[in-house]
Amino acid sequence: SNLFPMSKQKLWSINLLLLALTSIFIFVASQMSTPEKKDYDWEPTENVPQIVKSVDLNKAFSFCEEALPMDNFDVRERLDRELTVNTYWHSSTILSIKSTVRYFPMMDKILTEEGVPTDLKYIAVAESALRNAVSPAGAKGIWQFMKGTGTDYGLEISDEVDERYHFEKSTRAAAKYLKSLHQRFGSWANATAAYNMGGGNMSKHLREQESESYFELNLNEETSRYYFRLVAIKQIMENPREFGFYLDREDYYPALDNYRTEEISESVESWGAFAKERGTNYRMLKVYNPWLIDNKLTNRSGKTYEIRIPK
Image (cartoon, rainbow, N blue to C red; front, side):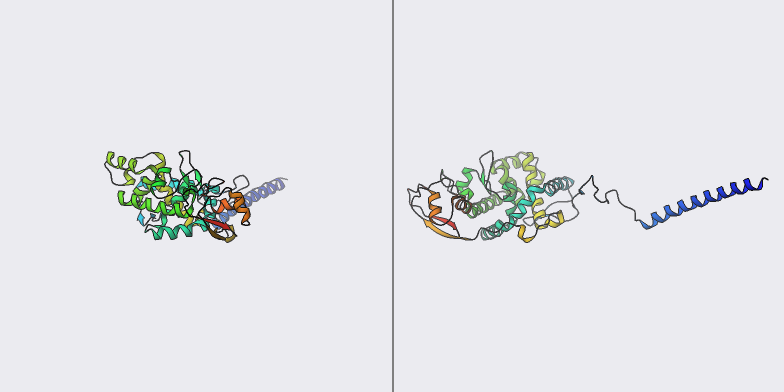
């Protein structure tokens, strides 16, 4: 009479043993078939829509053919900050990339003609995001010239004409200015810092801190970050897809090259009427000639100006 209960007990024991063996087999198989993942190797989920990774610093970096001392931890960390900020500052960075087709070919040509490195065009990106900006201090244009410096380097600045907004002329002036700073301070790292903070301030800090190198100077935060920002911008704009920026050819802003030139050596009472008489409008005239900052031109000296008339 005790045989049946014992058989039932044995059956339950066997079932439990088989269940345990099956669980162990499934666990071992899953570990063998799925490679071990690092703590950052995962896919976006519904609640986390993107993966944010650190930028790669394990390579050589240079600016104007001058190598950065990447064996210095302070240099690495300062560059890391600017690469990270500009990589994940999506709207500003992608808009600057879109403007490169419009402005970089012209800049490369002028910088080469003036005998300075074409990497210097990235200063215009850092200063104005390739736009005719105005700073709180009064610096204006794509290269952010102050009035005194702009005048010193041949730009006309008046109530009606401001050539800090003239792309070609301001780029040539910037090239000449940067060349003089390089001759004065001996390296492009020093020269770009001086462009940001002024030559007098740069000389003062080099003298007071008994140093000859930008990398050794303890400066205000803006200038301390400035050179590294240029290096970061260069890296991203030369290799946008490596930093997650994917643009097709049609995404870039086209060059403003569909125009004819008319020479004006007399006064113009109304640029609106001037534009209308030539088959365009006031807005387009200003887009092609942003250095005309008033609605008229009082040209008492009879100076000749080249006005671009969009077709």
